[in-house]
Image 1 (cartoon, helix red, strand yellow):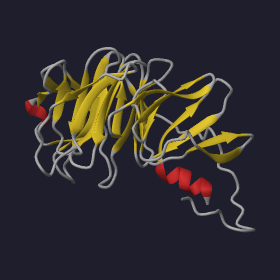
Image 2: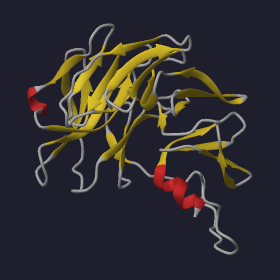
Image 3: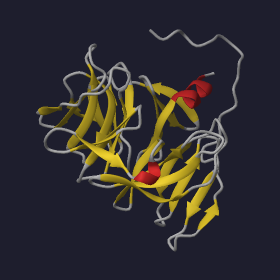
Image 4: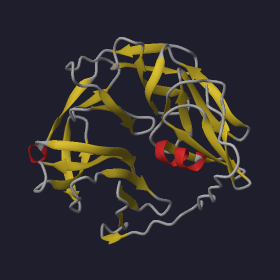
Length: 274
C-alpha cells in the first residue's frame, strides 16, 4: 500500500552520494529507500512539496527550501508564505509562487539571506501560474494555465509572445536543455493537433521542430538532456524518443531502475497519518 502511495504522487526522485533514494510527493513527508525498503522521512516541515525543475537537488516543504547535500537534506532558505511552485536558478537564488490564502499567483524571488522581492503579475481570475523554469544562472520564466509565458526579469514580469506558427499552443512541459529553454506541447485540438518542440527566446516563443503525434489523453511529461548530451522526450503514457547529437531521432526504451517491492497485506494496516 505504501509503495502505491509513493508511485501515485511522485514529483521527483533524488539519490544521495551513498545511493539512498528519496521520493518527493505532492505533500510531506518524503519517502526514503535504503536496504530495499521505503519508509516515511520527515524534514520537520509540513504541507505541500515542490521540486525545482532542473539538475539542482532542491525542494520546498511548506514555506521552507531544502538542498540535498552529503550530510542529508539541509534547510537553506525560508519564504514569506507557503510555496506552491519553486525554481532554483542557483543554490542561492530562488523563484517561488506563494499561497498566502488570498492570491495563488503571488510570485517572489529571494535567496539564502532571507531577502525576498515581490514580482507583480496580474492574471485573469481564472488563470494562475503552473510552472516556473529557466536557464540556471540566467533568466527565468513563468507559464500559466492558459499557456501564457512571462519573462521574470529584474523589474515587472514581461509577456513573451508566441510565434505565428504556434497560435493555439497548449504547453505540456518545459526545461533548460543545453543552454536553450525548450517546451513541448501541441498546437490545435484533437484529432488534428500538431505536436511541437519550441524554444522560449527573450521576446518570442518559436518553433524548433515537429514531434510525434500523441493519443488523445497523452501529453509530453519529460524533457531531459542525458549524460551523452542527447535530448530525451517522454510522454505520460511512456513513449520515449531520443535525439542524437547529429539531430536524428530514434525510439528509446524505459528501463526499471528500482523494482517495486512485493506488497504484503498480512498483519495490521498502517496507522493513520495526522
